[in-house]
Image (cartoon, rainbow, N blue to C red):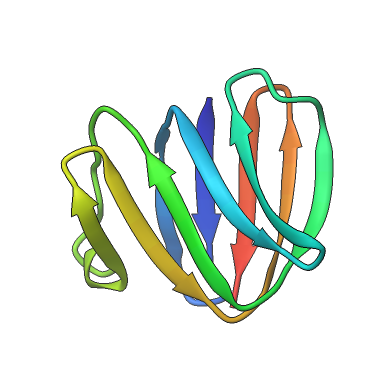
Length: 93
């Protein structure tokens, strides 16, 4: 599935991923390939991304923490997510 993470300042990440875990206001949840459409608000927490390869731009790479070769995380204060047609858009603060 394709993931985009966007902040008010810049697009932080875009690329193909195998899963993304998010801190929803009603509890954490995970999205996998071909997940049903969903819109949700996010609370303060950590977005965890799993992919076979990562490509960050120089401005946003420092915002992500490397867990291992296939996993990175991003701390957020709040946000919104939309999953539709196997594309995930995450708007974060």
